[in-house]
Amino acid sequence: MSTQPNNPLHGITLENLLHALVEHYGWDGLGRRVAIRCFTHEPSIASSLKFLRRTPWARAQVEALYVDMLDDGAAGPHSAQRGRGGRAGGAFSR
Image 1 (cartoon, rainbow, N blue to C red):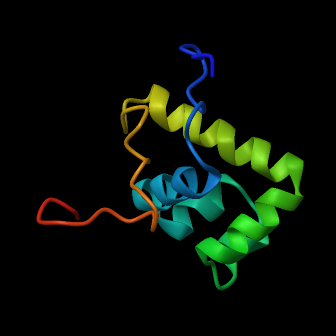
Image 2: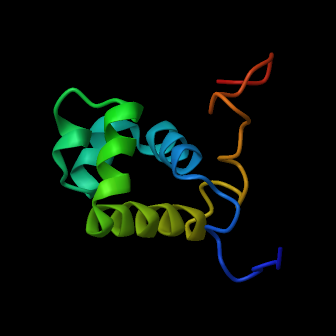
């Protein structure tokens, strides 16, 4: 596998990306930034993943928001990677 040093999305799953955005902006903030129903009406990770995987334009907007979040210094490039469940564990989690 080749490395992609200029691609901030390389190695980040859509689920981890979404967890990072929800942690940073919350569902309300995410819904204001990307106006899609799965973020504003009974939001959940599962329903959002299903929609984003089937809707390329929405996924592109969410990925762009994640890159903007990284550019603003809100999170390191791999801070969204958390293992299988997508949740941090231990004493240092929020």
